[in-house]
Amino acid sequence: MPISFAEQKARSGAPWKWLALALLVALSLLTGRLGLWQLDRADEKRDMAQKRQMASSKPPVALERLHADALTNLEGQRLRLRIDAPLSNWYLDSRTYKGQAGLYVLAVLPLDGPEDGLPAPKQEPTESFKPSPNHHVGEQWRPNHVLLLRGWQAKDPRQPQGIQDRGKIQAGEYVLLRVEHEREHMASRLGLGDRIAGDNLQHWLAVDSRVMSEQSGLQLAPYVLRQLEAAQDEKGQSINDGLVRDWPEPSDGIDKHRAYALQWFLFSGLSLALAVVIAFRWRID
Image (cartoon, rainbow, N blue to C red; front, top):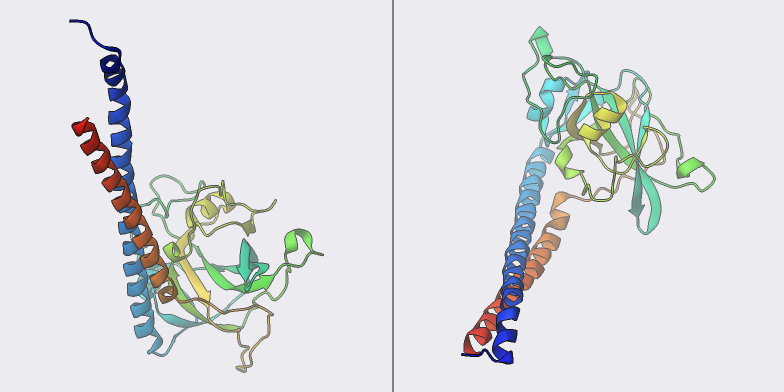
């Protein structure tokens, strides 16, 4: 029995119909997963905000030295740390404040070894916590530096790359800090390359202890010490460094993540509904 032209066209178009249907279902699953991820981020920020609220009710812990193996237990707490030696500055580019272009100023703080002569805890490398290239296989991984997020400064068009290299922390100063995990500061890796913004290893695009360790040869802990106010000298007098510390709190982004989640769920529902309608029409035809 001869096959009509319409039947031949229908048979030849069937694979494309199934492909279109599969793409709609895949799109629904993907956008639904993105919505769940946004809800997870909102829950994570809510937990961080609760921890910080509890920690802020306690007086800061006064420390003369900061040990590498203490950072995990100190996460979320405030510290008043005495600086033993001048700290060099690093910079995070492309940071705006009230619409003005600028940079975040970082300092690289050396860490002490284990307390009381105890051996360093064995720590397995992870995606965000890997040894630097000069780390020998078989040695225990022990971070020897941590980043200190000092504040924001506007770019100076008269200076190379807009960097105002001033206001470094000096020996004998006291700094009020809060210990935060690196994940609070890491941005998307898309389009960031090796994350070096300028022509030197002090100019970066995002916080990433793994990449920074690989490029600098330091062993950076996956934590950030956020400076909460201007440093003080030994007499308790504030030192004006010209940096802005109008820090957003984690709770500031909870509603934003929920709104994004709602958008992704709407896309997911729309894609799934469209797939059902198309499949129903094909069945009728």
